[in-house]
Amino acid sequence: MKKSLLDYTLKIKLPLILFVAAVSFIFTFYVSRAERDGVGYQPEQPINYSHKLHAGDMGIDCQYCHTGVSKGRHALVPSLNICMNCHTVSRKNQPEIVKLTKYYEEGKMLPWKRVHKVPDYAYFNHSVHVNKGIDCESCHGNVRQMDVISQVKPFTMTACLDCHRNPQDQLWYLNDVKRGPENCAACHR
Image (cartoon, one colour):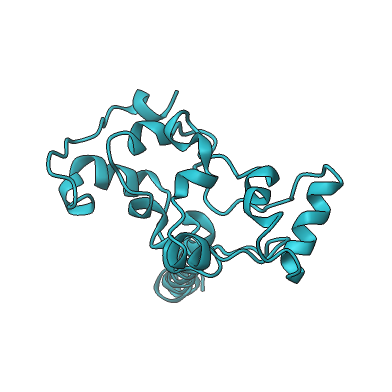
């Protein structure tokens, strides 16, 4: 009796358990991918803001609003006074601009929800990349065509290393593109 129970366990139960575990792992891995790498993340923002209108149709440079991008590590979310440079005059009766103006007049920060985020354990400096001529859309996608911002490329170690190792594949528009650092300390400080 014991031998047949052992045979049943080894021939039927164990392979079935291993199969269910493998399928569960694979299913979970693919279903949770967007959450792990951020691709597709598109939070609802407190104000409807169209990058397509501002950066695309109107041709406003990214650095006009994201002022810190060429000077420091962070791109910085624009402060309301940058928005109000235009919107004290332009389209000030539109519902979204009325909301914006209310935040501005009350001295409150607009609670934007961050879309693109490098993990806390990784160091990334925007200015190093921007000052080497790397376009924002190389990492952020074609923002000029997005009414609503979403993350279209993964911000993973693999994605960064792919670009650092083969920059000509991603940065084809640069004439003299050099490989980025691949040593651990460049990003993990």
